[in-house]
Image (cartoon, rainbow, N blue to C red; front, side, top):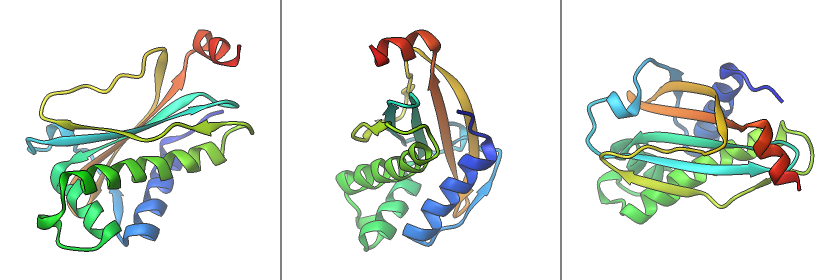
Amino acid sequence: MEFSAEVILQITRDVCSSIMSLEVDPSETDPHRGGEADTLAGYVLIAGGWNGAVCVHCSARLGRLLAARMFGGDPQLISVDQTQDALGEVANMIAGQVKALSPQGAVLSLPAVVWGTDYRVRVPGSELLAEITMSCQGMPLLVTLFQALPAVKKAVAA
């Protein structure tokens, strides 16, 4: 299964516009280099007919905005838990659309979220398939798609 940057961009646009009424546009700014101290990464694994992972990275500020749009309320009053839940759900919705385009039989993991100032998300046994930098409300948003390497695909199938 091949996923282009355009497909991932469109999926992300659809998720953000339909659930949170937010526009997403292509950009060159990576959240890790966008000047924000705290960033978040939400990720979901996909296993079955296609094996890989979807990771969504953004600033804490954008994470709070996503949560405010998803749950209602003022972004300044959104809790850490709500912010993490919202980013995990965004990653889950994007992964769900990737799963829908994958061969039958794939399942999603529960979303996981990392928050901090100095971290790296790594999906062992995978290769980077697509990395799309975007802007949402003028803030950087990065979606990465990883695909399991052939040796890992065989191990998962066994």
